[in-house]
Length: 390
Image (cartoon, rainbow, N blue to C red; front, side, top):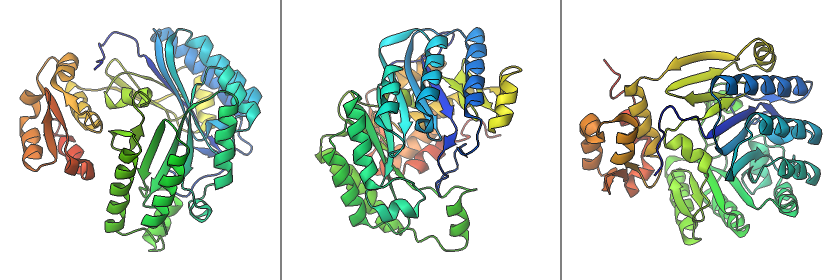
């Protein structure tokens, strides 16, 4: 298990492209409808932020890059080429086995664009599929249909992109257990190396939140939602996919290495409007709006906020994000980051969760039990503010 030694430059880069063709009804991400947006101005501002960032924290060998959004694949081929050249220029030293992921929407990935992505170094694409029923897709505000999914995956493979993942969602309005079963079956027929499957969370400032408050959001009941999660875990396991994190399943060796950086509480560069970064025990959040970000990047680092993370907060984060991983957390990793034993710091919380049957011991550490996987939020909540509450 790798651990971050502070003083070493981050080996992971997150870059945010905030544009979308439209806003999905459940989305509270920092994203803006593409029409009339100053896309090239934004990409030039991103180039400026990269330039300033690497002056302050020069990069070493980059092992993972993740481009998220928004929908990065709404960039036109020439914009995409400019963007990828910019990344390569500022972060030139790539590991031989770099994992370079980009989020994509089915329906925004024609062959020309995918070819530009491949040419620019992208070697892993994660498609936001969400469901295999057109009526559900319409009901959550997605612009693609099921045919687009198949066409996009075919296009990706045609240009030589084979490390592909799809996202599915459960707990959607009007979704039944049978509908989810059909989506999982169709997803598994694609024989992809990786699947992410998330439950719907009704977030503030979304259309779904407004409907929910008016009692007009027909969500599945709790019992059905639990059945959905149990079903997807058993179907994934049957098909040979390891559940390496609460919401993520992969063929052996095909786990998302970039996301593991977050779950291991390791450093990463965060670039773009609204992006978060974590370098040398300092977190930063960038300015969110497109034009304010563009303007700020022309004058310096486009920071909204930047603050040191106390050792106590870093320890809590280590526990919360580390326990999302099915292999759990090890005392050796904890000691490597903090110079102290996990037991010394969190004995009360660990033993409480062990006694509740939500954690189990493994090697020199702990992981969620089968029951704990179903009630993960209760376990993570145990460590929120455990050391920082006065």
